[in-house]
Length: 237
Length: 79
Image: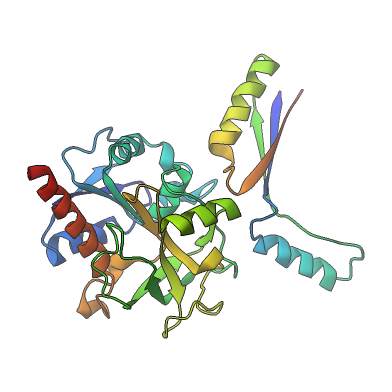
């Protein structure tokens, strides 16, 4: 599969994403500069973490108006798969591609630590390869990861199965202590109604190799690759 | 002319900064201090027809300068 990994001034997880896609998962991945107006022939887009445009004004607020994001809007509108990680999640929310918004952590601290994630539903292109009942141990590193959406939006998201991951403790309980940023319903990641766009605050690309302390995060990329392969097979048939 | 824009977090959004300031004010002994909301203030130098500017900046506030999911804004253009 061909992946486009976006690169904004201030992105800092772009190379990690390319590394995991290429060297760990054997996919093709290229960096696409924020000023590019076209994504080229790609199967999926990754919006990586970092501090695009210095996080000025609001996280992701300036990046969403960059030329490449107009191409991503079009790509997503045509059913293309897009995954945003950390700052990428913030950008996709600002762009209106995902519901809700991410605000300052409840603690007002930048939190950089390992968390446990519960996968709420396997019925998405981003979670289908997560083992049943598996709690993923992945790192977070953010100051603005507190997920917010109004009650009506949240109810709709829950009904549609759009909440994909929640912060939990080591036993899978959704406790307040296990919530690193004050997100509503311990939400760590969500997808859009059509389920082709998703975002999460934790960094699966930093937890995709045993040598880095764990490879739980790999299941998210494997899910996406699996979904893209099925999509390709369906097209060919 | 100057455009003055005040952006505040919506009441339903967790505002830990506001809460912290609120507690600090109480701790310092200030009486009668209630809820605190910490927002942003933007001052933009502008030139041109006031009505047109107001329309344009209102759009910019809605689209870019604030995020309507989490924030409210007040726009004012003064001489």
